[in-house]
Image 1 (spheres, rainbow, N blue to C red):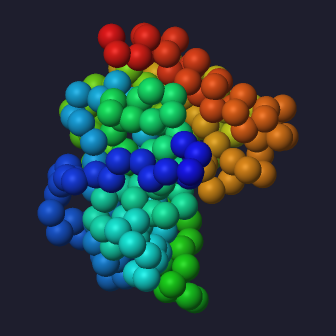
Image 2: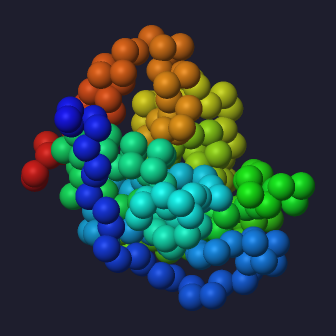
Length: 219
């Protein structure tokens, strides 16, 4: 079995900030669990996704944050992003969370997800800011357009063309960290080639950017 096929380490704990949070009634009604962040609270890298998906109850423990209560624990996106961080040397030095902690169910089909509303993003931003303040990471690694938009909103900034921002560090004065946007793991197979990378080159570029911003792995 190649390294790309092996399971990454599975989180054993989660960082609960507001048990039973009901700031967003529509999210509270349809979620199974609040998907809280996981990982060391002194991590150099804080990985941010948009929101948990519906998950898969028939999967093994990688059921997704809506069922596990732990961010980025789905079979596809969760395993992929965690495996990527392990391969570039930050597997033990990364904290994983979402900009919105609850599964945003589509009213027309509650088994699929919709985009979180602006109000839901705003309601949940306090949790994300608490995590960033607590972890105090060197880098916030935002996976995808929506996660990048949410982090920039905390800086009172808007996203102008996501693809052009991929792997381009952004100094965040208010958050006192650096934002590094990357492709969402669910869509990277489509977009890596359009960015001019082969998969291994793209992964290496992430590793190089993190090392430049965080310092050599292990220090």
